[in-house]
Each structure stands twice: as structure tokens, then as C-alpha cells.
Length: 197
Image 1: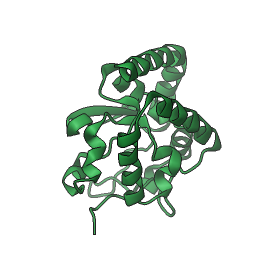
Image 2: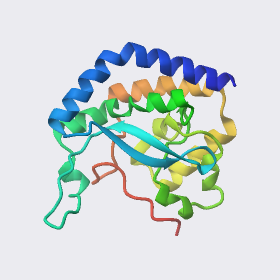
Image 3: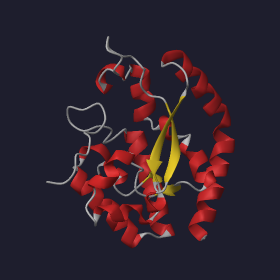
């Protein structure tokens, strides 16, 4: 209950303060990357219940002659790379925090298609609400392996507290300013999870 109150208060305050910036970003994203400015996708939340996650678009919708989306590294423009490195693309997630679908801190909500690929231990990441940031994000983000990421997620589940959340939020701000751990080596973002060996 305390965590929910903390999440709601911080998310509401942040949205009110950042409203002018959000309006500007909607306009800039529509101009440089296309419409709609928001990227919406179904993601598994607490207890693997599906919700709609929103982010600012960071890639174009360019397709090949067969109508398939081009690779991420082709569609990721300089402007898209900037809003991703600065984590501005995550700001719409504050709305999901207000709704109660997400928390400020928790395991990042991954793709629905990954659900059947998790081991029993890895699936424990869904025992809590997903977060805008998390323990894995401040300890390597996209530069660590999937196994390391899941181990950090489960560690958070077992050790979560308001003080840990505040520590992670502070570390997140530091990481954003340093623009650290944005992508895996040789990848525009992170390699897809294809299950355990």
C-alpha cells in the first residue's frame, strides 16, 4: 500500500511538471518519426496479466518491398536514438503507473511472446508489477545477458522495499545523465530472448 501511494504521488507530480515537455515531444516525434507519436504494445504485468504499455516512438515505420519492417538499426534515427538514450521515450509509462498497471520500480515489462520461454524461477519476475526502471536496468540494462537480467529481476522480487526503490530511482537518474548501458554490443537495442539452453 505504501509503495502504491509512493508510485501514484510521484507519477502524478511528474506528469504535471513535465506536461509542457510531453506536448513538445509529441509534436517532435510526429514530425521526425511519424504518427502516431506513441508506441503501444501489449506486455505482461503482475501475475502475467496483459496490459497496454505506452512509450514515445523511437523508430520509423519504414518497410521493405514485401511490407516487412526494416531492421531496428535502420529505423532508429538520430532523433530516435537521442530520446532513447535520454530515456524520454519512457515518460508515457508514468500514465501506466497512475493506472496501476506498472510501478516506478520493478522488472521491465518484456514481450508477451517470452512468457512460455521462461524457466519457473525466471517467471517469478511477474510476482510484482513491472517498472519503468528496475534493479537490472541500473546494473547493466541492455549490456548484460538475459540470464543475468532475470537473476537481478528475481533478486529484486525477493528484496523489494521502499528504500531499495528510492536507491534504484537515484541510480536511474545517474545512469540517464551518463547515458550508460543503452544497447548490447552490435545491437541497436537488445537481442531477443529465445529461451534457455
